Amino acid sequence: MRSSSCFVAAALFACVLASSAQSAPKPAPTVAATPPMGWNSWNFFAEKVTEQDIKNAADQMVATGMRDAGYVYINIDDTWEGERDAQGVLHPNAKFPDMKGLADYVHARGLKLGIYSGPGAKTCGGYTASLGHEEQDAKMYAAWGVDYLKYDLCSFREDVMYPKALHDKPEQARLMIAAYDKMGKALESSGRPIVYSLCQYGWDSVWEWGASVGGNLWRTTGDVEANWPSIYNIISEQAGLAKYSGPGHWNDPDMLEVGNGRLTLEENHAHFSMWAMLAAPLLAGNDLPKMKPEIKAILTNKDVIALDQDSLGQQARRVYTDGEVEVWTRPLAGGAEALAVLNAGPERVATHPFHLPLAALDLHAGPAKDLWTGKTIVLQENMPVELKRHDILLLRIPAAQ
Ligand code: GLA
Image: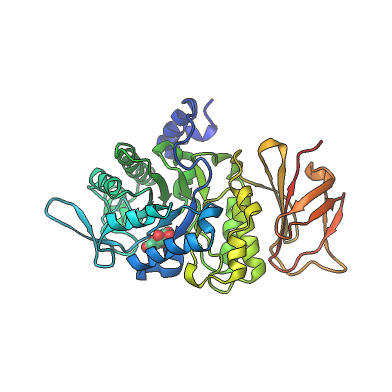
């Protein structure tokens, strides 16, 4: 049945795409059956990234045990692009002298390579993007051995949406969706399984149409920053999006800032925990060669990673709030459940802890595993929970006997 939003003219094109995707039988996804895990160059290196940084990241992925913990993709973000030649072939710039060689280097370490482009003439960094060369670029990525593409809207707005439809928002959206569909089809016919990551900051409710253009993940927000207000704002924006996410097609609240900026240890825990609760792609964005032990411990926590990668693929829902404390729950394969109690405000300790209303949240009393301490906590109705500022309690509750 069509949802009522299908009758809103502005959403018509997206709706037609979305409803055709709904009615088709869902084959098992060939890529991104669980949220993609890896590392991306942008959050730490930004425009300075070089081939050597990518090689170092690949080496560190292996040396730190991150690869064995599940991190597979080594993703080059913006600023690798050079110029097109007379045949339209895009060459990497001097920072990336041998893309095929780099892909081989990454693959030889049991990892996969990701790359970045966009539907406009230019990327966000002002480098050459794919407008008018979509099939050619997709074929080239496949020939290099690329396994993942992040496709960033950027100049498509100025190049196509505004010149063609300045005052016509529905037409702008239609043009944008068609551009993402075009690259989706180009990747599909490239002959190589390539994860397709849509990056257009959540515009026009991308979660409603991202899967129908071949997207395996789509950004739901603007750019993450390595500070608590940014991270908490993004967490808040994910409430209500659970139903759009699942195996092969994930909501992407942007890459990880764990280990970057001035995030406290509690904030790093809360950030990583919530991304796992949200079944978010886990793309580390820190300087791996200089990673501190406590940051490595967060990024390689097997229980938290297993939560993120749970095969049911159900994103958490926010089920309760009390002041600045929020409770999120997530059903897991086999009838287990994950519970996160997030304190977005000042500490809740001593005389005024948070009280967990188990029955009201349909949770059962009994033992649960604290995924950060590894200890067993026995859940009881209205039990007090003490939390530091911006800290989180993250539990796995086994299926009821
Ligand atoms: C946009 C994206 C970022 C990053 C930069 C690169 O801002 O949202 O994640 O890729 O472009 O220029």
